[in-house]
Amino acid sequence: MTETTFRTIAIVLYFVGMLAIGWFAYRRTKNNLGDYMLAGRGLRPSVAALSAGASDMSGWLLMGLPGAIYVSGLIEAWIAIGLTIGAWVNWKLVAPRLRAFTEKAGDSITIPSFFEQRLKDRTRLLRIVCGVIILVFFTFYVSSGMVAAGKFFESSFGLNYLGGMLLVAAITMLYTLFGGFLGATLTDVAQGLLMFAALVAVPIVAVINAGGPATVIRNVSEIDPGLLSLLGSDGFWTFATITSIVSALAWGLGYFGQPHIIVRFMALRAPADATVARRIGVGWMGISALGAVATAIVGISYFSQHAGMEPADPETVFLDLAQILFHPFIAGLVLAAVLAAIMSTISSQLVVTSSALIEDLFKIVALRAGSTRTLHDKTYVLLGRLGVLVVAIIAVVLAISPSNSILDLVAFAWAGFGASFGPIVLLTLFWKRLSNWGALFGLLSGAIVAFVWGQVSTPLTDAIYEIIPGFAINLIVAVVVSKLTYKHDEESDREFDESVELSRVK
Image (cartoon, rainbow, N blue to C red; front, side):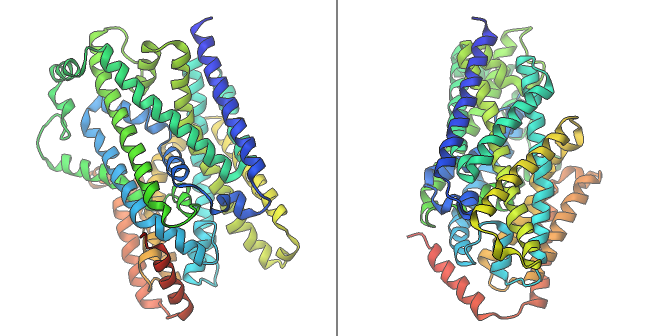
């Protein structure tokens, strides 16, 4: 058999496995919206941790990060450091409280509904605005993942872009549509383990083939000693270096506001499970990030010794090493790991977008029309599945003609969600006196500042990542407006105190 045949067999087996898990989840999912959108709050710590990691990292971990370090050296590793620190803080501070607060606040199953219940927002504006932001941004986010999938098949198998994109879209949509949150979560676990195995195996085998760690370090140092410095080629602190490092570390702030990640906290069996989940999740992330960094460094050494084999695109250094060093079938499994990273993120975003469409927008419209009494849980689950289908179709249409604007939005979306949702999530969990108007104006101001900052090109905006000013302005506006509009509510205070007590991890 040819190399392409072996790789194709591996990819087909991967697809069959994902569909089988989706079918299993479908059989386990009950006909109520809470079960379809949140797996009945029954996730084990290990499942929640691996699912959060896989849905978070996307193809960035296997392609983007190794490619950036391959070109610029370890100075690009600060993003991974910032993300790892942010993930740890998120699991430590946010996870147990969000699990407890969302249950106490009307058993909320989405972030927008939690904000409304926690802040007693009777205007419904906060929930609607949040739902619209999630719906718009995640539709484009899902589309960008499909673009990446199409390009993956085009470059790895020579398959037509549209055919590859539609194949991934169809399979991801199927196991997400039928399996719901549980389907997305269980496939995330399998995908996370596959990614982890690939990120451990590739650098180890590559180091051995490159002559060992000492040879790798010596070769890279001879090419450019700055490649091994966290301060870059300059090797010392400059204003440009400091702002670059601060902006990279600031990626960690984004974790507090990513709906497709923090929804895993809400689905835990109990707040106490966050401790075990944190250890598993951050451990997975730390080792995986180290594997990605090591792959790039050993790639620099390996390809310097094998002239003419250098990757045409730096972001394929991980894939190229795998296909050179492994049997074609194993290389196919490594390619499947990259697909896993892309698909796990798409599926998680589809579920969150569908929940925003049904739980946070449709239900409000139905309530105003006075028709919610005639709708049963089965109907809402059906609508949830239709929501997945609609969002997936729109995303596919957007991805048919890939454009830079869609791909650029991915980089902005992390900052946009982090700057808009992040501070409000923290304030709802840690400050009693946050008002619904403070949350609304803070959320809007954070999103607007992050968007404008990211679109304007000046020395300052180019040097500082937009999440920093967006996050800061959001906090300031939310606190100031809350101090002006807060009204004491006995029920809200009681829920807050009970939630804090429930969230205490013994």
